[in-house]
Image (cartoon, rainbow over all chains, first blue to last red; front, side, top):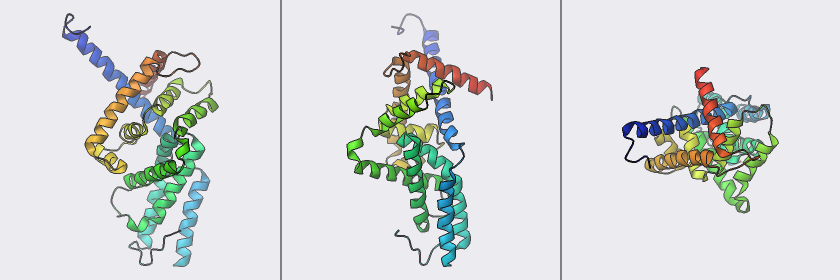
Length: 60
Length: 200
């Protein structure tokens, strides 16, 4: 419907709008991911890795 | 446990460096796990399993290569092999995500993020992971392809399909929650993203 009559500008505006929306989604996506990245790591996870390390160095 | 690197290619220093780098990656592994598994508890189990798998396989890791991509690949494989075992729970992804959303239905929580999580949960998993890796995890298409075990072109097309589908879901009300209309989802995301980028 926007095809022919209103020339370039309208199509460009639609394109800009689509781009803006994709950018917004991208920003939120990164925010969602970063929120978890920035959470403190549960001690339990760190402990397991430290213990694994310990075991190894005891052997050596 | 199967590990026993008798003649470990890693010396003590290498092993120490490996451990440090792996610890530094835990937050990223948790974030990736969360997007795959949906609910936080299951996601942390997944991150933990992947972390231990990586530790056990440390002898096969080439120091100096991309450890982040390597661990993400391990985590992803772990996720799909568990999922295959639990074949009866194929709907788990989405249900888990929705349950989590209800559980965390905190009036203070930014609406836009909830909408986005719901929208993501609706995508086919191969599109979701491609979009997350490239759009949020900071991986190049080539790295994402390696992690997913597919061609670069496949990742590119999955990402672009995911972007279009996600936008459509957010705009067209393929989803509905508490009677909120879907165009509201998109406008809250737009408003929020604008706020975030101007506050930087």
